[in-house]
Image (cartoon, rainbow, N blue to C red; front, side):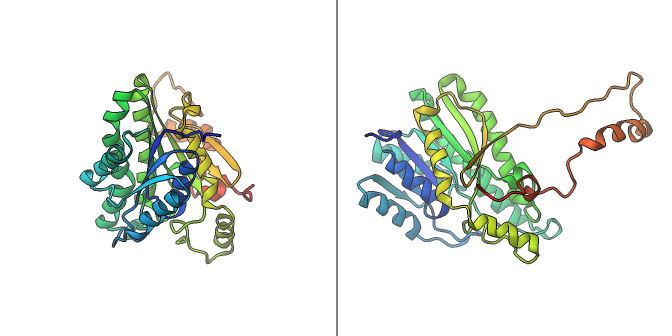
Length: 305
């Protein structure tokens, strides 16, 4: 029986390890030819190693699938373009782009350097732009294609010590929305996934307090392979009607996130003053305020299912 991606070509960035590797392996099992992109850098973005990408690609080929390793950095526009060029050169087309590549340089806001800011934005956000932009002419010409971007609840909800990463991941949602709106008329769709999974990207989460230790134990129970089925589905023709959405995967639970929407409104026909805002508006709105210290653990306080 043919897989749901038979005849498709999928490019997966950051596919040498973790979630990206599991996505590449499942897409190959579902029949896709896979461009396995990974420069093999450290979690902070330093260094480089051909091993992770080559290992994933070799594993796919050993199982009878088709794969090609690409070692480019998505932060480099030329390198990002080479990912798509390799898809065309090796397999003749490109059908789906999975923007999974990411790095971390965490630090409290008052300690964050300009270099830590730009490096994370360059890979996590601009990198997704670079690869998506390179694939767009092919998607437009063939009147089909799927972009799947990996966001994070660090951006959707917020997290401590991740101003750079949170900004990049929420910006990626906005990029996906814009691509979805601009490209829907030519049959191209764009969606986001916020993954919950234990990987080297989450292994840096501190585990000192009881609450932090509980959070880490929850993450350890959520394996990267649980994310891959939704990616494969969104890359397939089965998902032709799914566009401009934000999903999350938390072990065996799939969540649909809303976009920001108004939740309260108040009108003052005479116009507002600072004092009337303090006396009337804020008391009326305060019950609907998000908690000021809210992080993902407050939104998902229960054990993964």
